[in-house]
Length: 118
Image (cartoon, rainbow, N blue to C red; front, side):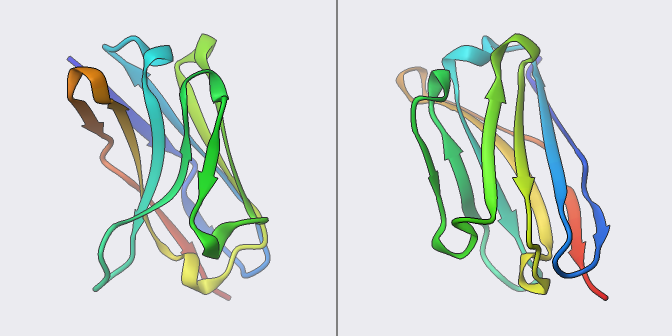
């Protein structure tokens, strides 16, 4: 059974930092492209960051470029999202997503809440 378990969310003041982690089990992690999505109240879910296998390529939504960094540790089956200079607009539930396009596999975590507020 595939599981993606996010952690690291919480309440932080504007300008602060958080690091989200997502630990995967039940799959061959190194074969999967990993994504972080977020969904704010009343808004559609959007992809925040993306990292391909072996960390070869990364990509970010424009609103987080220069502030967020995605990384992965295949030995630990873990993907991270380092979030710096957080803004109130970053408030959302953040979801971890694992994709293996060739096999049409797509898995989601339960999400972790990030709230940026003074």
